[in-house]
Image 1 (cartoon, one colour):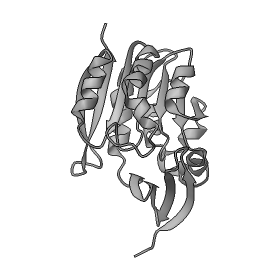
Image 2 (cartoon, one colour; image 1 turned 90 degrees about the vertical axis):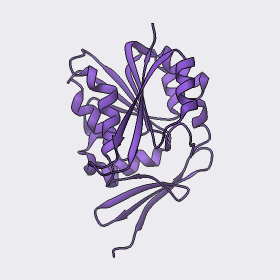
Image 3 (cartoon, one colour; image 1 turned 180 degrees about the horizontal axis):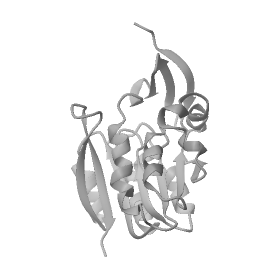
Length: 223
């Protein structure tokens, strides 16, 4: 069997070690040695874009934010749905993850970073959302393994009450928040409801019909 090769290591601001590894045609992102995103199990990352962006195929000048670049599969799926005049902002906390996409893994998802609609903003997703003045038609969050598990401790602010309130404030009318999660989190659903969202839960497969089941929270501000 081909051994895994480490292509790069980096650290989040709170010290979490992020590693990119390769074995043959496979790539794997890890956080402190735990699998964060494999290149062979991408169905639910692509489904996140479908859940958040499917209503935007004909929306003029749509603006979408993705929290977490990963290996680029959510970005590619979003771009495939969005019209030519759309704008996609990717908030990525770790600059090395951006560099790895450019150097090593961009081909996996069809080079989404070279699309003229794409802008990468290096920094904390919540800070980038709060600093925005134009609003978003969709905010897609794929940070850690979901709202219940934080590889970077700062992500509890993103998924907490204050973070959800800021997200709601920066969604345009009829905007959608979509959040990827490895498992169901009833407390997060209650926080969404308390923040003024109507919530539905979509169950998706990680890979094909037999892959692991993952969850996507689809939240729309209540009027």
